[in-house]
Every structure is written in structure tokens, then in C-alpha cells.
Image 1 (tube, rainbow, N blue to C red):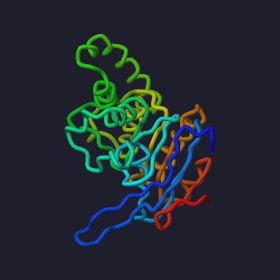
Image 2 (spheres, rainbow, N blue to C red; image 1 turned 90 degrees about the horizontal axis):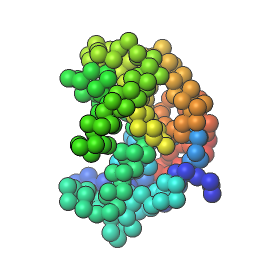
Image 3 (cartoon, one colour; image 1 turned 180 degrees about the vertical axis):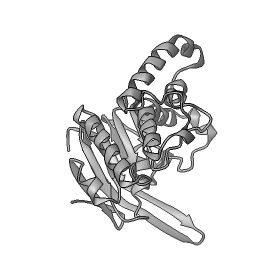
Length: 247
């Protein structure tokens, strides 16, 4: 797909389990156009989340490459650090991966990963704080707060800005997570089983929100095992035996 915003080719990922090697991904290829909504389906344990984490530069494959807007996400295999550590920040490749995650990618997970001691507003602001140098934050704080409030209103939680996560329902917590993921206007939103921890009503409401974001042009790559959720995407691919196939 020549007009792909995100593409991956030949992705392999395996894990050592004692004396056994577990091959999770066996040469996955995928392309996603700008503005597209793609769902990745597969059984539990098939490697869906692993693939999503690699596409989003959270994890590193042993083989294969991911390109975003024509730019390589990972170093060549011979120079690639599979288990990154603090010293890897010195490499230009690792700094590029960090830039992708902070500025260009947004993430929503099944378990919301909100900080319990922070309010809704503070949780949403956190992404902007992390991505802004300390000295620059003092000048950027007012605009960031304005943007955060606008995003919280966008997900329907304008009256909940001072509430903490334990004062919210599961669906509301996931909406906070989406607002946090979108506050820096990512080019791609990665969603890992976003309805997996919600009841049917809250899940339907959340999918309505994702659909409306997609209608406004947001590119979304979502992992799910739920066929009803997947069929709300533009396109479905299925992960089976470590490889992707079109549905």
C-alpha cells in the first residue's frame, strides 16, 4: 500500500520460556492509510497485543521493520537492542522511538492505567507535561490546560474534571484514558481491547466515541477479540498462527 501512513513488513517476535522458544509473530505484514480504522482480531494469546505494541514502538521485534510516514521506527536488526535499558537513550534510534510515542502515537489500553491520586484533569495533562521540557512547561501550562479541558469535554466528562479515578465508572475511566491519549493530537491512536473491561452499554458508548473520532479523521488501529466491535472498523485483519490475513 504505497500511500500507507504506517506499515510493517516481516515482523517476527519470540520469547524464551525456559528451554522453549515461543514464536508469537512469524512474519506479519500490515499497512494502514491515514484516516483509516483497522481492527486486528485473534484468539486470546495469539499475539495481538504484542503486534500492536510493536506497531506503536512500545516493543521491539527480532526481525522486520515498521515504517511511519516513510521513516524507519527501529534500528537495523544487527544493531537492534531487543531489551532496551536506560543507556539506550543515547542512541538516535531510541530517541526516535521516544519521539514517536510522545508526539505522534496515542495509546489506550484495556486497563486504564490512570494515576489514582490525580484528578481527571491532571491525568489528561500528564501526557503534555511528559512531552514538554521542564522550563518550557511554565509558559505552555495555560494552553495545555485549555486543551485538556477541551478534550475532556469532547469525551463527555466536562463535569468530572476534579474527580479522581475511583469516583468514576469503568466507561468514564476509559474516556479519560482516551482524552489523555489524544491531548497531544497523535497521528495514530492505538487501542488495545478498549472495550474488554466494560459492560455492553459502556462498551457501545465507547465505540460510538471512537467512531466519531474516526469520522473526524483520526487514524485508529485497534486490537479486539470481539467480532461485533471489530466490524465497526473500516477493515479487519486476523492474526492466526503468527501471521495476518485479511477478513
